[in-house]
Length: 238
Ligand code: C5P
Image (cartoon, rainbow, N blue to C red):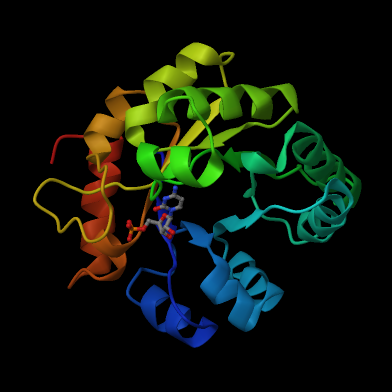
C-alpha cells in the first residue's frame, strides 16, 4: 500500500520521538522533515528516523546560486533521504546543479534521492504572484511553466496543490511526479490551508504522493487517523 507522507512539523527531535511512540514500532513510515525540525536538530533527526526504518522527504526548499545549491545537495545526498527539493524560481540552471550535487554526493551503491521542485507556493495567490514577482501570466501558466523547467533540468517532479495536478500531468512526460500537500480527510479542520483535497480525490486526479500534517499529528489517535487516511489514499473501503 502507498503511504501518505506525514509532515513532522515539530520543534525538536524529542517531540518527534514522543509522537512516534503512538505508532506500532513495526510500522515503517514515510515522513517529512521540514525547516523547523532541521534547523533545530539537523542531520541527527534524519539519522534517527533512518535508524528506525522510516523513509524521509527532506523539505528544505533550496534556492541560491547554482554553485551553492550544488554543494548543499552534495551534503544532503550523504544523508540517504528518499526525496528532497528546491524552488523552481531558482532557475533551470540551479535545478540542474542541484541534481548534479545529489548525484555526486550519493554514497556508492545508494539510490539517488528523488529531486522535486516547488513551483508557486500554495500560500501564494495569483494576485500576489503578479504583484510581488511581476509575472503577468496566470498562476496556472506559471506553475505549468515551472514544472516544464524542472523537467528540462532533469528533476523527478514537483510539489503542487491538488488543483494543479491535472494541468502538470498534461504538460509533462509520463512518470513526472506530483507530490501534493493540503490534504484533508472529509470533515477535518482545514486550518490555514486554502486549496484542500481529500486523500481519495488526490488519488483520483493522479497525485503520486500526498503530504499530511495536522490531520495526523493533532489527532486524538494519530495511528488511527493515519490508518484511515492511508486506506482512503489507496482506495480501500473503510
Ligand atoms: O498540517 P498540514 O497537512 O497543512 O501540513 C502540510 C505540510 O506540507 C506542511 O509541512 C507545509 O509546510 C507543507 N507544504 C504545504 N504547501 C506547500 C509545500 C509544503 O502545505 N506548497
